[in-house]
Length: 182
Image (tube, rainbow, N blue to C red; front, side):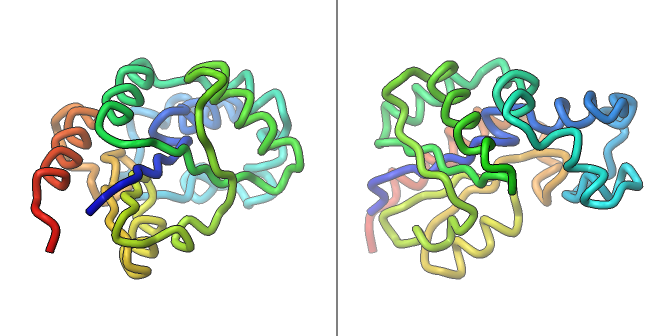
């Protein structure tokens, strides 16, 4: 029986994608992104160092990365069903975690629960549901014994989903919660 929702931040709540494109002056790619391609630096023809250098500072994570429009509604809808913990991976910059926490508190309230760390699969168990935009994270979480929903985005394998991604996920959460425990 699912008892907690672990919700990813970037790509679902925080619009890292458009912020990174903007900083690199590549907004033109937003509407032409290759379906299912995760690696932004590859699409932009940059090395990882060239990609991260202008992004990896407190101001980018706290101020440049904007929320997607429906995040408060989505977070509240999930929270009406089960306790929600935001699980986000920090960059290598030591200020990233603090900026992400400040961002969460600003947009979702000071009482928002969160965990910072890249190893989300270590929290996998039958009582935890991960909602993430990364095929890799979802796959590792499932392989470790957890349940996961891949949030539809142009950069993952759910890119063909045509309905609103928030509605899509809410429907899947409701279906999982309605399924009797085995």
